[in-house]
Image 1 (tube, rainbow, N blue to C red):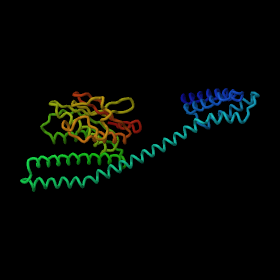
Image 2 (image 1 turned 90 degrees about the vertical axis):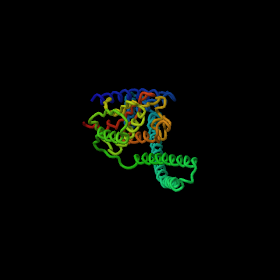
Image 3 (image 1 turned 30 degrees about the horizontal axis):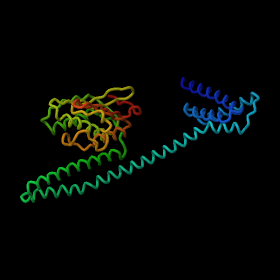
Image 4 (image 1 turned 45 degrees about the horizontal axis):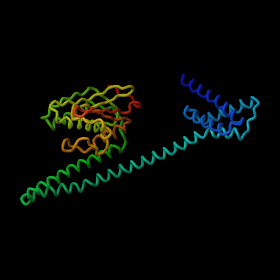
Length: 338
């Protein structure tokens, strides 16, 4: 009720100002009167008063001016009204242009994603060939290869493995942008627990403390959200590899009307001056000789989170660890019950 009264007051004040400005214009205000008409039109757009309401305001102003005995020439009143609605025309034109630009950008993104998927997919066959023949060369020509030859061959095979990782990363990045997105109740705590067990099983000698908050529930696509958690937890696992007492924490917290999920570690961390680079494709803040990786994982995380209507960001400090936060568009769906 209060909002309706406020809107009524806004319209009433606009009507008063409009009538006064129109009266001044037909009394000989000239260009100043038309400028005032344009300003009133801009004000109507800003305050949410539609063009039909403004036409009604114009009609009421004509009646009030006529009732006061003042002559209102059609050409002058028409000029004033035309100038007052010009901001609406400009807004509509900008909306159309923005819509066209958005459609063009979306089409270009679809084409780029399709191209990236096709290129990455087509690279698999020649990579398999290089890997296969290099393996045959290593086995069948072992005695004939010099020490340098063996070293060169090892470099080739390492490069093939690196390229395979990049190709698989690009394919995964393209896949998360394609197809329908699911909407189901997902136990994020359970997913993190499964991924943590798999990582520990692969490197049982590492001593890592996991602190996983229980019953962290969200709505979304289970497979895509698993990919988010695998990438974030995989990063935390990797960047704590040089810590004797590594700790990785997963949980959630409320901030206003949304739930923020987070993955925190006490690993290598990063310089916040380069935080904007974290989510770019092939962007790495650490050298490959220090920590292995393709530079695609966080870009995949960002794309999945955005498909869920959320956002992702990070905080960290060199040598002090990092925390990655993300939301899942709860302003639309609402938080999942525990």
